[in-house]
Image 1 (spheres, protein in one colour):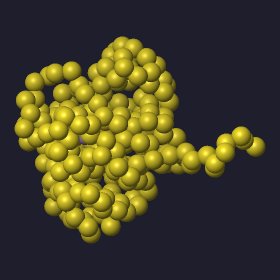
Image 2: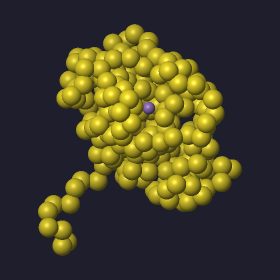
Image 3: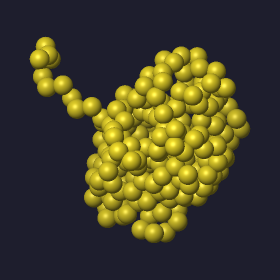
Image 4: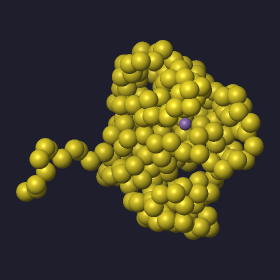
Length: 228
Ligand code: MN
């Protein structure tokens, strides 16, 4: 059937609200896209060009499955984020056309080994070990833009064991979805299946084993996982 010399890896995917699966190719993440979060991380929230990092597609945790507490950290942080799913690829996409490339939106969690990230920043090293580890991207169901449109505003909130930890509005993004797509597509030819985690509002904090994590974005959806 194929010439692959080992079994081909399974196709990562996100569940679609109402049925179906969205196959995932790459996961890009925007850093410091909300001013209050930039400040809480000790940075100036001036509108500098956005920067991105990546997670492997198979870091996704879907269907409300539990998330194992990763090794090599004592400071695992949650970051609730609006996730954009690219349905039509392209390079050098103009901002005015960017939303036409979006298939849908979901709520996702950018789990972060904050202690390893701080060490990487200090040493001038890449963030991969802090951001791109296994099971580092729990994600809720994907809502098609054909049904919900392209939300420019909406309350985004995150609770741990029912206690509010993060709150904001996706309208507060320093680089809105269209601008992030336009900028990113100047560096990568975006392709169907690419996801973009668009950054987190203020209030990030540590979680421990047994914690119940729940996020919601009005007009988009929810995400939930338990740290195991
Ligand atoms: Mn993030």
